[in-house]
Every structure is written in structure tokens, then in C-alpha cells.
Length: 119
View: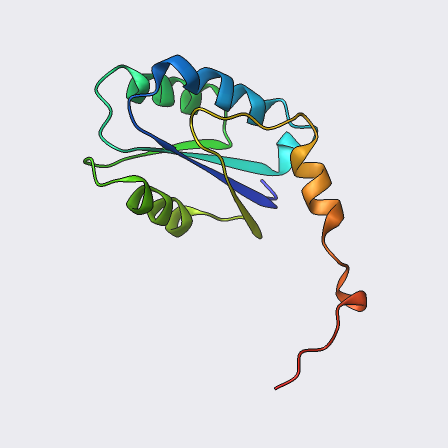
């Protein structure tokens, strides 16, 4: 897979919302260049099993299971595993609009238009 964007979702006991968050990433217009990393932070409500099911269904979804350590540790572990050129975060109770990733990629300045850094 030519991974352009790694989306990291920290997951902790969010079974009510997780499906909508994941579906909002899966429905991105550029889903084929996205890797989705679900970082299960010690969930006990079934969220951990839902993460595993998504990883079984899609090649570009992976799961990291860790003992409960908090959202910052979960995000950092997701960053360590990320293969994308860009990283995006999504909270497990939020959703992306369908073209969010595409708009994010288009909004970045092409290298030839960046101002040179001054040292």
C-alpha cells in the first residue's frame, strides 16, 4: 500500500461511538492511501473486539492493544507505528467529513511555493 496519511484513533470504552468514527475514515474519498491505526487503551466494553474486527476486514486498518495508559500514550504509540507521510488524529467520538483527507492534502503548499527557512 502506498500510504500517504496515517489516521490514529485512540480507543477507550467508546463502543457507542467507535463505529461512526471508523466509518468516517473508511468513507474518505482517498481511503486507499490511508492507513487507520486504532490504539485500544485497555478497553473493556467491547471496543477492543470491534477494533479487531475492522482490522480483519481491511488491510489498511491495524490495531495496537495496550494497557490503559491514557490518550497521550495511545497517540504516541500510534505515531510510532505510523507509516504515512502525514499523520492525522481523530477522537473516537468524532467523525471526519467525507472529503476531509483530500482537502487536507490539497491544502498543503507544494514544495516549490514554500518560503525558504531562514537560519
